[in-house]
Image 1 (cartoon, rainbow, N blue to C red):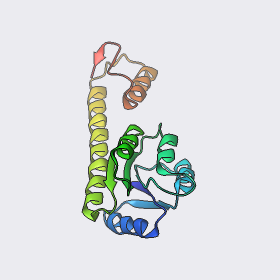
Image 2 (image 1 turned 180 degrees about the vertical axis):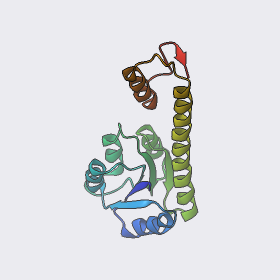
Image 3 (image 1 turned 90 degrees about the vertical axis):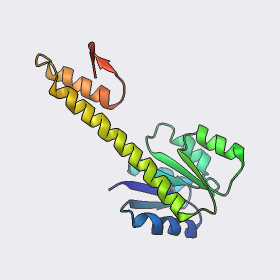
Image 4 (image 1 turned 90 degrees about the horizontal axis):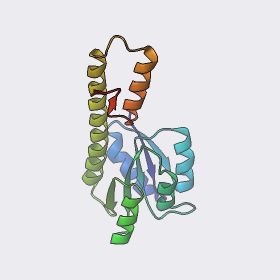
Length: 165
């Protein structure tokens, strides 16, 4: 089950997201502010964060700065509608930006789109790797194959010892 962290200081916004996304079968976690969010991120891997920008303690921009190395997708849901806020959010790694108030179908579609594309990329990489390994040179050593698989899955190589995928 895919984990989603919903970070918003307003209870009604968290509850609305919960109503929409629980029906989709996601495992949902909640944080009242950026400080709580960063603690949860240390304990769990989230496929997606739904993040408000204006919150007490630690705001959404600061959370995004702290998560620069994270592979989690991020949807910003904010009352800030100015271009500068949007540019800053995207420059810090946001994958989508939804202005409040928002339509529940917009949120559901953005979540589905981001998570579906992530799953489809992972599935494609796995199938490509499995196909390549079926054709692998039998003389390869176990360490050679393990190194290749790890590197490929991390996206660090396009070819290995002259053998293209």
